[in-house]
Amino acid sequence: MADAKRRKTGDQGPGHSWLLLTQFAGWLLIIAAACILGLARPQATTIADRIYQTVPRQGWNMGLIRHIGPVLVAAIGCTLLGLLIYALGLRRGRISFPVSLILTGLLAAAGLVAFLRYTPGF
Image 1 (tube, rainbow, N blue to C red):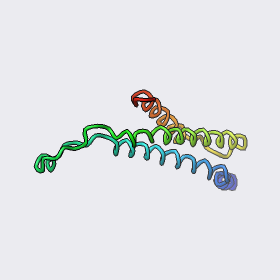
Image 2 (image 1 turned 180 degrees about the vertical axis):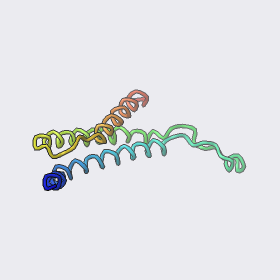
Image 3 (image 1 turned 45 degrees about the vertical axis):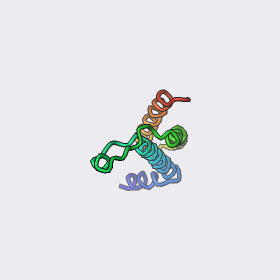
Image 4 (image 1 turned 120 degrees about the vertical axis):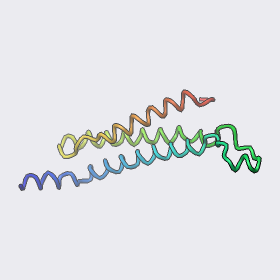
């Protein structure tokens, strides 16, 4: 019983807190990139556009699109920092494997590859 309590309190060290912080920051940056992509998309035609005979924006907002790359690079940076913290905490055996951090890194890398592939001018 005492060993279980000691193990549980061992995860509350500064390494665990920094690992959670990098996981949270990585997911926040992935969500920010998705929101930027959603705002930059061409507008869809609605019933109000047809009634008032307005023309919605037809092209992508490239001013917003260019901000996705740095956001995804920052998410990859958070992933690498979190993996470094995990590697340092692994020596002590106190930190569990960060699946969420790996998933964040894979999503950010895939998004960055798609961004570089499909954005003109890069």
